[in-house]
Length: 378
Image 1 (spheres, rainbow, N blue to C red):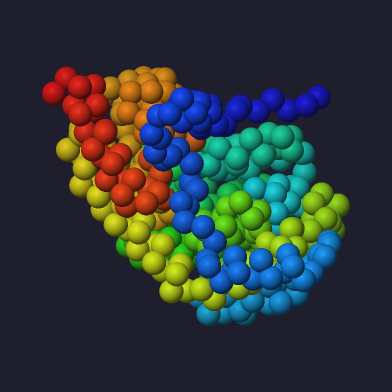
Image 2: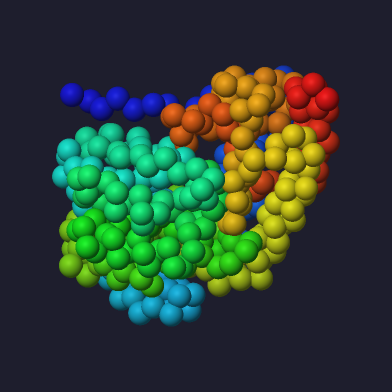
């Protein structure tokens, strides 16, 4: 029997935004975690050259796998063999690959709530059982070792995300070590979604591989490298799993786009341009952190990384999806409802993505300020 999964409600918000834009409205897209910057210039130039000179085909780039392995040495001080790197068509297929190659149908996998909607939906689609652990302000909206230790029975696996979507919170090194200790003791396999690494504002995010060499790590070129539309990512698996994961990749997706692999290899060395993008996100974050409390949004998850602000609007609504739709119609600012990330308490939250330009962030604040003043009766 086909699995029943919930829709990604941000798609409905985006559809309304596109409809209003077609009517001539000015729209600021803060509903998706999609960088407004494009791929690094040198990567685009490489893509043009490849299009003119290479017929391309199904291909796995050995140089790209080697460069990703070198990234772990340079960034985390870890020695990783290139054959442990499985190239994927983005992080979403990488998640499906990691789950399918790791767990049997019916097995239980823990996730934080709030958390990325695809965790819950991918688990359900694969006939696995998501075990969502409520994580509130006391846990900084993140998974904890204590929560995993308290689960009875122990789940087969856990998905960790640091920085997290929708909150941006980072798990401290001490807590990551404690999580690993619990997982080792209870036989829980760890999948670490590290797609937002490189986007940190308070401290660098630590890779789970620094604490647990057998962890499965998912990453992508979509966020830090500003290459969302290129559909390129990777899964880093333990040596004993590499052959199985590679077989799953070939059977499910063949290979990632050849053009994206050529461009991605070049993008990894465009550090100055990528750092400039992060500086924009940092500026946008500061603007919103100053403006939103003045609008009455004082309960915000700690935005340590990524490019999100997850704000409590429970004093204004108990239906955040309808709230987002009204906000969009009235102001032209598109945001995401918390119900995508938390089916229990998300009706009280909305998520702002500040992966837009600073000019758009400033304009969004200008539009939102009187709207929230009216909504709050001020």
